[in-house]
Image (cartoon, rainbow, N blue to C red; front, side, top):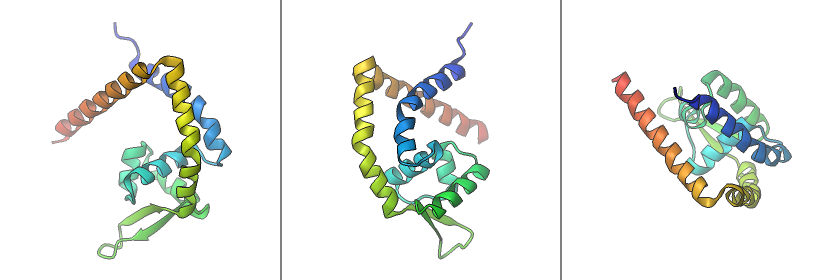
Length: 145
């Protein structure tokens, strides 16, 4: 009988977030806000549907989170000239500054993680999780065709 992989992944996620959550809280950010900031920082401006996919946030939740983030000055939204129904979300300078301020703290936390469990374990985990996501995404694409 297989072990409960979804439960194990959730437990691992919670243990990881326990390491990073205090850094986010100190910046006044929620986990969802940080995922969005990080996705926009790494990818540039995105449409909400792209943010949903990258950050694993439902569309109804994202609408509320983005509205709060816009009110806080973390993101801006602008409509496409050729299609007013579409919106592009971008980071503000304030959010870029937060990312830059957090980089050394995040890197220190990742180094502490590697010291605790080993750089090889962390590297192997990246490879395994990337492969799992790639194969499951490919399988989903084939299933919807």
